[in-house]
Image 1 (cartoon, helix red, strand yellow):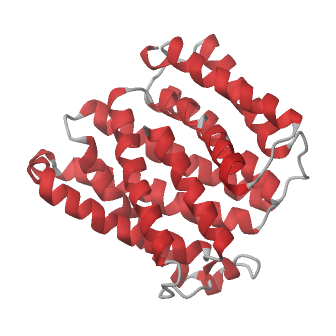
Image 2 (tube, helix red, strand yellow):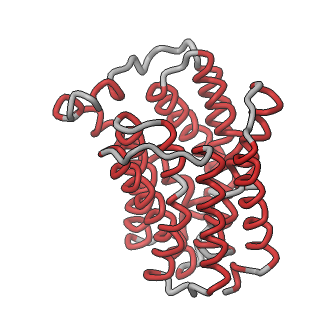
Length: 291
């Protein structure tokens, strides 16, 4: 469910951009709407779960969600502004490897030979699918995108550590994602004039332009579902299992794009998609989450 909702959310976001929506305005508006939806959901159905919180757990959740939703978003947008789209598309898949490595180091999850082999297949498949076998020369934006991957991975691993150690509801973890992430985004916007001139245009937008609010609302719905099932996955399975299964998302997005956006795949991209599909199903069949 996490993979399906992520794919739909990416697809709707792509449709919004094709229609003319601004990336930062859409992100902030959908983030605010997602916070409102999560607040309504938690108050109606999960209000009793707040009793599970302690000061230590609350600080940990805010830290993990700030790193994931705040820093990850900032580095991702800055990186995209300073590198090519081809490089950006491939480099965000590095999160699969960084999550597995951080889970191995921090959570002591096993790094078996089968897991390593499937990780390699996922990276190779993503490379072929997104770059068509071509990769431009590295740029400074590439480093920023790797930092974004590290931020997402660190956030996910910290959430997994909290959920594994403490008996708290995973939906409560989800509630704190926009609460911790949005303030960091606004702080980044406030300091935008101090950033290099090549990055500043990313943060120069009218957040109150409601022309594409319908897309923001649709994105928010699937963002909430994505976050909920992401954290439920982290509650039940290892962090490396979650990110390896998440590698199926680009394939689902490609299918939606082929059917509804008129996009196409080259032969080498089909090879990459098949490698990712094979690795994803192997991750499930080999019970990587039990390793």
